[in-house]
Length: 212
Image 1 (cartoon, rainbow, N blue to C red):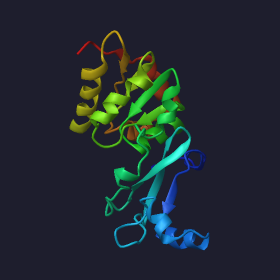
Image 2 (image 1 turned 90 degrees about the horizontal axis):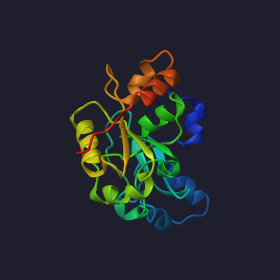
Image 3 (image 1 turned 90 degrees about the vertical axis):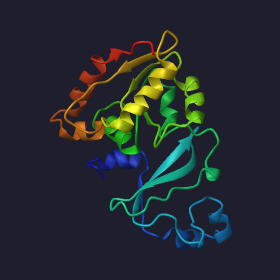
């Protein structure tokens, strides 16, 4: 997946859904009704994910729910929010307890920053930033150094502006990462001949965000 190493995929427990989850779990003694409560079955009672890569979303070390990415971009369904842990903020959010945090846009960005970039305390907000996420973030980022590292498209700019408008100023230490020639940090690290040194330079050259 995206040139991630096997080591990184194992560390983050990334899986592949082949459509056999229900059969597997029934073989383990679970009832269909029990599996349905996880949100991993569709309205027809069949596997929600089939032919896609699966990313576990953790809250306090426990799985909240799963997200998926279809390499063929045919499946866009995700587990409904009613099945999520109410305290979920973002992908790899448990890493936000560190003193320095890289905030990314998607799961593969986190895997690349942690793997190729060698920076372990990376998390992703995924999709459009919600008011719930914005309200919860201060509990994770206040008093820490935060490096927004979003995509270089219009959506990424909106991400960055949302963070800056809410948190830039004396209470927060937001430092802006700048890279060119790539659509996102995942691609930028893949293009680099020495991704760890490249990412270290991005961190060291990050600029303190001005007050909004």
